[in-house]
Length: 278
Ligand SMILES: NC(=O)C1=CN([C@@H]2O[C@H](COP(=O)(O)OP(=O)(O)OC[C@H]3O[C@@H](n4cnc5c(N)ncnc54)[C@H](OP(=O)(O)O)[C@@H]3O)[C@@H](O)[C@H]2O)C=CC1
Ligand SMILES: Cc1cn([C@H]2C[C@H](O)[C@@H](COP(=O)(O)OP(=O)(O)O[C@H]3O[C@@H](C)C(=O)[C@@H](O)[C@H]3O)O2)c(=O)[nH]c1=O
Image (cartoon, rainbow, N blue to C red; front, side, top):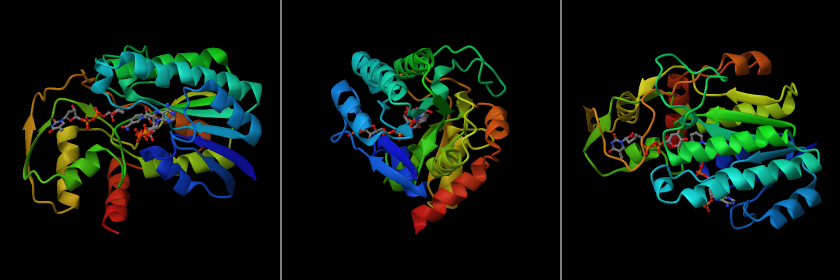
């Protein structure tokens, strides 16, 4: 049975992955149990468990706060990740890591190819890009999956915010387009990968298929959950961090290499809605 070590185990994606993995021995560590910025703790746990795969779900994900916490964001998203890649290589574990659509600047109008030049427009994106580069340089057996606009029926995310807020009227930007992606679908893909690993290491894109604005996504959530809120489109919404205006990503390489059909945005949302209601 394959041994899987998961970091950041109480986060949104890790929760989905823990639920989706089947036929594996899973060792999941919360931030309290394993702080990835502590290289001794990383080393000790990896050396003891000798995992086949390390799935790194630990990250600094506060996009706006990162603008004033640059050092912390880089420490978690880049420096700790570099160390993790070195230890993974030392113990021959395959490192699975997640990056973001926010490594791109948004100045395009068709989905980003994996090898399109990166140019983050905020600190969070820059810290995630530094993490990608560190892993690539260490050159351990690794997969980096850029995912985007992640949501689930739990955790802190756009879907849950719309579902839970008491506000009856929301103003949501219709000037940013991307691919809302269900954490449940990313998690299913992880289970597929672990049981069907082509060992074709490198960087990939994985999102639900299609693209929409945050406004359109809010309207879809409102409708599917029968929330009856008023959702107004706005051109700007003031935030500390700049966000790319367009960040859909081309996932063809992933579909081909892993022989995997990624679900549509609509199917992804239906499944999260069903889980949320149950
Ligand atoms: N959410 C999104 O929309 C997207 C996310 N991603 C990427 O996907 C991955 C998973 O994100 P998601 O599940 O949403 O993130 P979450 O913020 O839900 O979870 C991240 C987890 O990492 C933990 N963590 C933070 N610092 C450390 C540390 N030093 N050591 C160990 N654990 C730590 C947090 O613990 P605690 O809460 O205790 O600090 C939290 O449980 C990340 O790499 C993220 O960059 C990519 C694109 C979109
Ligand atoms: C609260 C609010 C936000 N917005 C806008 C702000 C922003 O442009 C957009 C989404 O805001 P959020 O803060 O929920 O999402 P954001 O933190 O930008 O989400 C990102 O998280 C990181 C971790 C990623 O890697 C990205 O892929 C992406 O998912 O909605 C409104 O238009 N109206 C509102 O009332």
